[in-house]
Image (tube, rainbow, N blue to C red; front, side, top):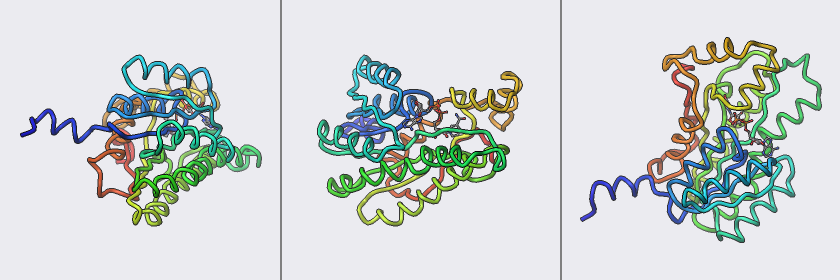
Length: 263
Ligand SMILES: NC(=O)c1ccc[n+]([C@@H]2O[C@H](COP(=O)([O-])OP(=O)(O)OC[C@H]3O[C@@H](n4cnc5c(N)ncnc54)[C@H](O)[C@@H]3O)[C@@H](O)[C@H]2O)c1
């Protein structure tokens, strides 16, 4: 007979799994890859930031996990293909893909140049397509997988001076649903996690772009039922749930993780 502890750890274990996270060198993506690595398996950090990506891989190995860093700009189809090939060469399969890379340009439609609009959508929405396009055939071959896209509260409602961001994140939620429909028959689940404000470099850059006082901005961001901004770990726990055996009949969902901000 198994013990309670063994049964509990089986429900969370990612042993034997291979997980890939984009934008995992810092912020929320880093929190996600650290959480997944803590639960076992092989982890792959994909990011444009070579230094922070290598540091994150190093930290995972120091904690006893297995990690590789692969430099990958999600705006490049060639980079995405090479990164997936590198992970397949090392680990033979990919069970979990978390598309987390994203950028936020705080401008309305009149202020946005077409180049800024294109860049925002290229990273934040088309990046999800590019990685999924490369990874899904491998998941089909190995019998299934779990894809978790990182959306935003502003995927489900609008926000001020964030036109391209809102468009990209809204697209991410509906792309999630479309992929869930197309690949359910291959045992591939596709879900979206929609975080509220988390104190990362991105949130601080948004504050700077808007020319607002940091303390007032953070106070406003914490104004929600659970009365604080989120942490990368808050979001990582939701990703872990959707990645593993606790969510085997959940697909096409948008899970809001925002301390009640949208409530
Ligand atoms: N921070 C928040 O409040 C918040 C809220 C809701 C949703 N999100 C979403 O969470 C995700 C992560 O945000 P964050 O706050 O951790 O941001 P962050 O800026 O702290 O980290 C983003 C990471 O993505 C990487 N990246 C940027 N462009 C890339 C590209 N072209 N290819 C590969 N990697 C690239 C960066 O190097 C960085 O490591 C984003 O999709 C963001 O929209 C963040």
